[in-house]
Amino acid sequence: MTPPAAPQDAVVAPLRFGYGTNGLADLRLDDALPLLADLGYDGVGLTLDHMHLDPLAPDLAARTRRVAHRLDVLGLGVTVETGARYVLDPRRKHGPSLLDPDPDDRARRTDLLLTAVRVAADLGAHAVHCFSGITPDGTGTRVAWERLTAALAPVVAAAASAGVPLAVEPEPGHLLATLADFHHLRRALGDPEPFGLTLDIGHCQCLEPLPPADCVRAAGPWLRHVQIEDMRRGVHEHLPFGDGEIDFPSVLAALGATGYQGLTVVELPRHSHAGPHFAAHSLPFLHRAAASAAVPTTRTTTTRPPTTTDHLPAPAAPPPGVPSATPQGSTP
Image 1 (tube, helix red, strand yellow):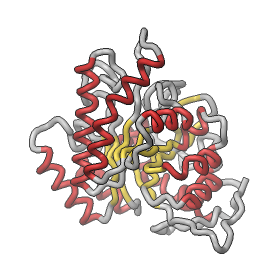
Image 2: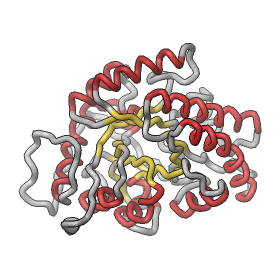
Image 3: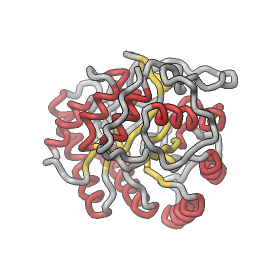
Image 4: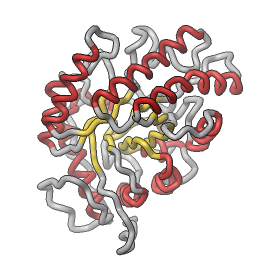
């Protein structure tokens, strides 16, 4: 369904689109950044990982300065994401987490987030992304929330000092899985100003009781970062645009109406085998969806708009290799 155009006197913020480096894991960062600039993206969701600005390797400050210079030359904005699968532990995906029973392990994750805040400040990033993790076996809900609150408190303080918002993401299967869970944590932390929300549009389709556009409107006051991809109800599988069930014109209309100024980052972490292909096809799709909803964007593409707004064509078929579904748990 095509959403109504915004009223004449409504303030609609231009949308800024980015692409996540977790969907370009087979490329060097020095190759990925100019690729995205050449395609017309406004920015990049930079996941700190061994292949892309390793947060644990030596001379991080110097390497960060080089990346900051490259982003400036290319005219790319940036958000810092912390969802690398094995950056802290080669044997545990997304481990250790902020909920780990071992306090030293929880501290390792907190330290990674503190490093991410420093990197984000040096890059001029608009936000730092994080997530709670899955509740460990044998851990009660009350204890899990207490661990999460305590582990994030110093990160929130560091974010406040650095002037970079911390944006937690509700993840299917995690302790913090829904918008309601975000508000629970926000209140537990004392509603600090630098603490906000990463809203993943696909996760709204997968799990939330409200449609994605309504989720955007409900989340508007706390939005600090947005991730976007297609998805189906009840299945946590990040899909290329057109392969799922989401009505993107209505979502982008709602997003523009919130006044959100950050990046809206395409997240296709299981499609790195064809990352340049999906990066090339995702941006025209988003521009067509925005145009059909009369939502301004900061850049234009040469792709001709569709003659009807009732259906937005899916991207061309990708090269062989189809990712498997992941019903729950961390972003695969």
